[in-house]
Length: 279
Image (tube, rainbow, N blue to C red; front, side, top):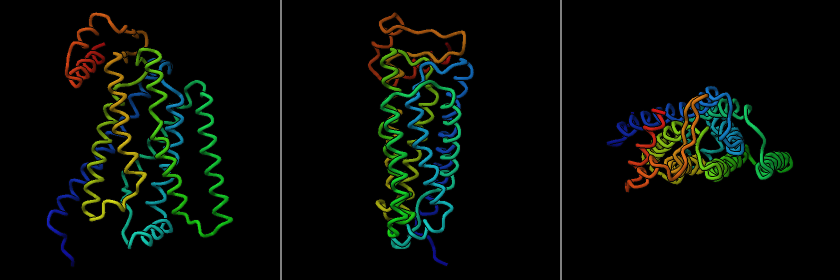
């Protein structure tokens, strides 16, 4: 029986802990928005374009993780191209992807109309995937693994633009009413822990560049994107109170001026977060 190199068992244990912790944080992060919509009996302040990009992204990501986890054909093709090494998709990745897709669909069905740009992006995604499927039939050299990587690329593309519609709506409304700050904090926590897990897995495998590129970049963008939205939430001072208790705080009012005078951005966020909880 081959012994693991020193440090590997400990790294594996921490990888599992970080993996399931980020899975819990990410999975829970979808619920505050659903609960907030239910309490407010509406979705005003929530961008449908943002949700639509999430639906496309998590549809691709769910298929991607399911294939890497359950398809022996895809697994064999991956090992053949990576010197016999297995992929780094974990069971919690699959559960998270499917769970996120279901909750996003539930939230998406309750919202309003799409922008023209979003419709174009969705049609482009559907058309390109359909074209790729036809190409697989015409050209047998294109394998199932190539299709999964193509779907992963679309997930990456959605991650690049997913937060832009919501941040634009927050800026236009000068408010984050209808947008759950708890979602953002949990999402950022999950993104950070997931990156740590991926670093550990790559260190264990001794090949940091052989892991799925789409998973790596999507997780990194998730963490950075939510940080940008957290800054937007802290600066605009949106309230996430329940139905019947909505209020919109104007920038320049006395409470906002007090927060603006604080030089530490993290402290400003903590103060704003506490105020949103007590609202």
